Image (cartoon, rainbow, N blue to C red):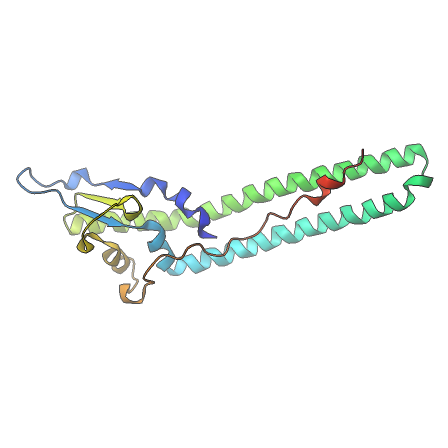
Length: 200
């Protein structure tokens, strides 16, 4: 599910806090964190995954129903095509083509629906994380906070993730040490097998 989070948090690769800049005689203070990692530690993460899985399952079930209808009509057509009247055969072929097109359109719409659902669930949590990061930066005198994914090197004490987690009510000691590679991805990509069975 979380494989798309990177795209949703791209705006957080560099968060500047110019309004908190220190006077010229003080050095700039840089911190870093990982928004995706923070998200995975929050209780909302499991809820998001659960809701997306439910939504994905509903879409898949509908797709399976449509495909079963197509398969049934295709088999009936193949059995009787040789003895069908030309008008009836052409009507059946048109019906199969329409069903095939309907399946492909549903697949496209289902993918868009899942992406929209994910965005609607993730965006409010990202906003909450953003607010927490800015509060931690202000409270601790950080001039800039960058994503650790863009960090080539830096001191351990520059990692503000534990402070952000505390701000969000999560015990840093109970957090995972490293971000999960990717949570289970809801599957809505049933192949459009129907497209392989178009009649000549």
